[in-house]
Amino acid sequence: MNIERLYKSEDGLKQRFIIRGTTPAFMNSLRRAIMTYVPTLAIEDVEFRKNSSALYDEVIAHRLGLIPLKTDLESYELPSECSCKGEGCSKCQLKITLDKKGPCTVYAGDLKISDPKIKPVYPKIPIVKLLKNQELAFEAIAILGLGKEHAKWSPGHAYYQGYPEIEIGKCANPEEVKDACPKGVFLIKDGNLMINEEKIKDCDLCRACSDICDAIKVRGSRTDFIFSIESWGQLDVDEIINYALDYLKKTTKDFKKSL
Image 1 (cartoon, helix red, strand yellow):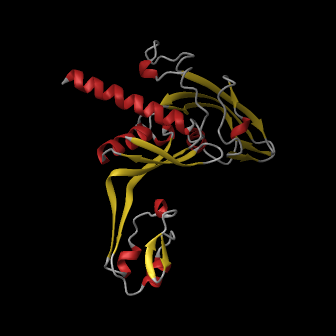
Image 2 (image 1 turned 180 degrees about the horizontal axis):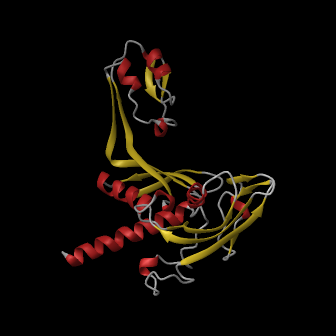
Image 3 (image 1 turned 180 degrees about the vertical axis):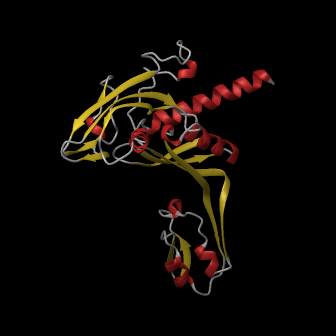
């Protein structure tokens, strides 16, 4: 297997790779492991002390649960794997409080979190707007969870496609084919339609070209893939991929042992 990084965003939350010499089964296993088996912190329980805002308790609790929290996987454990057996301790849960009085807008950055290493990824996420004399006070518990249980624990989005393989036959209308490609994959040289090698990685296999010219064959490779991942911010991409690979290694080892 050979891996080449195509793109990394400035904040490190988006990356794109070419992975050569593998199978669709492995790529899909990695995608599923990333989205459903990499744990992150999220608010699970909320006890309201005061809420005279325009929103019901349930609506605010739902908003709180969807706030991405920066996650430290070395300091926290899944409740099911904790020594307290899920009863609740400093190893598997985190206390979060808030006490605000209007007029103001309550943001994610206003949350008081007991662990200074944990904070909202996007502090300007609005929770609720309080008018004059309206109040909001609560105590919440955040725990590690998995995306398979609820989307709020999913660390990001991952997807892949086969590396583009394009065959060009004789086309009567090369200019039309070139203009039809939304990714600029084709160019014209000496009147002939050719592939722009700098752009072929951007091809998303839409086949707009082959709809115009039957002599063009477009398919995705079954051994080479373009893999993209976007983190919601709780973990960086390297952490997500490493944890997902460790999970796959452990589960396949356990399966082999059971078999």
